[in-house]
Amino acid sequence: MTVNVEQLSCQELVELVTDYLEGALSPEEHARFEAHAARCTGCGVYLEQMRQTIELLGHFPPEQLSPEGERELREAFRAWRRD
Amino acid sequence: MATEAQLVDALRAGDEEAFTALVREYHPSLIRVARIYVSSLAAAEEAAQETWVGVLSGIARFEGRSSLRTWIFRILTNIAKTKAVREGRTLPFSALQDPARVPEAAVDPDRFLDAEHPRWPGHWSLRPEPWPEDALVAAETRERLEAAIEALPATQRAVLSLRDVEGWSSEEVRNALELSETNQRVLLHRARAKVRAALESYVGQP
Image (cartoon, rainbow over all chains, first blue to last red; front, side):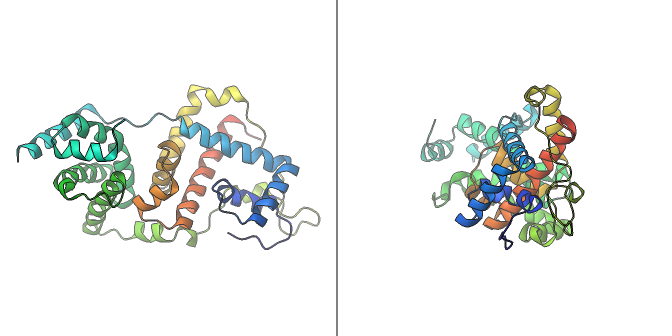
């Protein structure tokens, strides 16, 4: 995603957050992003919330396979081993 | 932890515990990814089940040219796509190929001053407020998070789950879901933005 305007608006910045966090911005865009986020309270908070969201997702318990599902797959495995 | 080569050898040798460990690790993600392609949870579960049968029948021929998990997810996507074709579904493919075609704002446009504003076009009119730390660790927040993930479109949910919950790299997700770098990022961006918004509406309404 490219930013053509000299000044980055808040509405544009929020659309660049993932590119920023993924290291996908050009050095110039990256610098502009950081300059804005440092000066602007709203965007600073938004960026922090995005980091908190990702952090929370990382601690989310992984989904469990049901005991029945596991039993069925073990049976499929044994059937395969017999062949 | 066993290396991938050891795991492959164990599977070939008929080691049931090695197989079960693999199933536990990937089965829920297989179902989540299958839901991109098929219409029902039941069909997605079936695709995941069939994937393991495919893994077992193909493991003798697995050459390690991709990672084991990429290979497993390739088997899944092939099975799920075949089911989708049988179901007469075509839409998810185009959604996967080009998510950027349909624009979607990360934040409600009403929260910004409009583009014609004389001094601050596109700046916050209703900016987000910092979240209280204790609210984030509350049990109910976790429930909200779960509901927000479940409410995502299937493609966004799959990308977000693999990247942020399971901790895969973007390259692994791109390989498993056959996505371009840009599309993977667009889907992740939209999914994260929606989850953030859901948390905001619960934790800290401005």
